Length: 96
Image 1 (tube, one colour):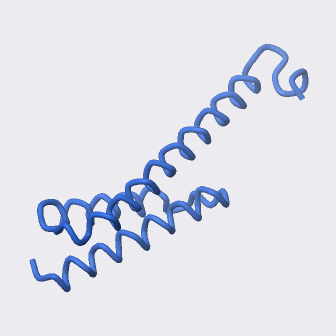
Image 2: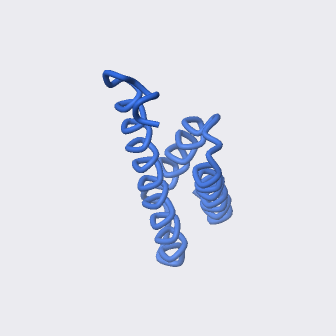
C-alpha cells in the first residue's frame, strides 16, 4: 500500500474517531454503529501497513477509542439503571 493511501486511511480513521466522540458526548447516537464499523474497516485496512512514523497518530486514535468505549459503557450503565427503576414495582412514579 502506498504511503499516500496509508496517510489517507489514517486521516479518515482520525476523522471517524472524532465524529464518534463528538456524537457520544452530545448524545447523538444515530448511525453510531455505522461509524464504529467504518472505524473497524479502516483499522483492518491499516493492519500491518503503518510505519514507525505513524505510531504517535495511532496512539492518539487508541486513546480516543478508549474514551469512546468508556463513554459508551457509562451510557449503558445509566440506561440499565434507569430501566431498572422504571420496571420495578411502583415504577417510575415512586422513583422520581
